Length: 133
Image 1: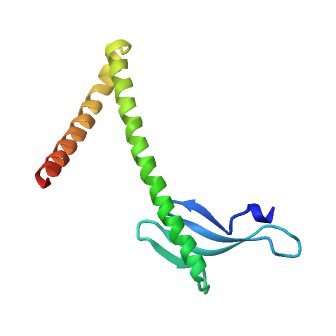
Image 2: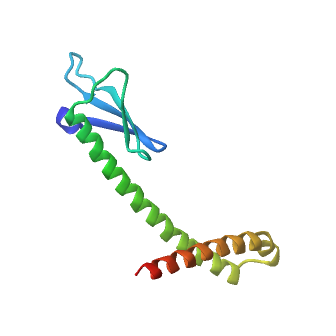
Image 3: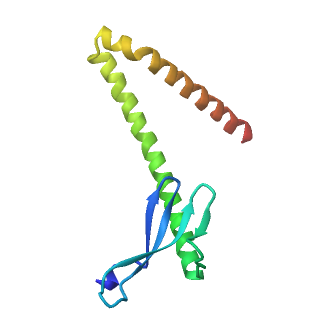
């Protein structure tokens, strides 16, 4: 089992993680997790826990996790947008085929405002991209 465990464990939290070093080299052969740092993804800030000094190996592992985590979150963001597109299509189908007047009355204004806001942002951003090229 010792070979199966990673050297570090990252407890994900809002905007980062708490970093633990995983240790099984003790008498009881229990898994021990020693907190070594806290990571803030927004600032890419690594704060050692307590008076601890991080080794080069610790810092490299944390920086690698930061890069991988940011890539994962970026993939999730794009996936969420594709899901939103699917939901817009499903909403269109619902409005056209299933919704009654009362249901449409409840959601129409909110949907129109949200779609107007989205369209405004997308058009402005596209215009910005076109003028740069």
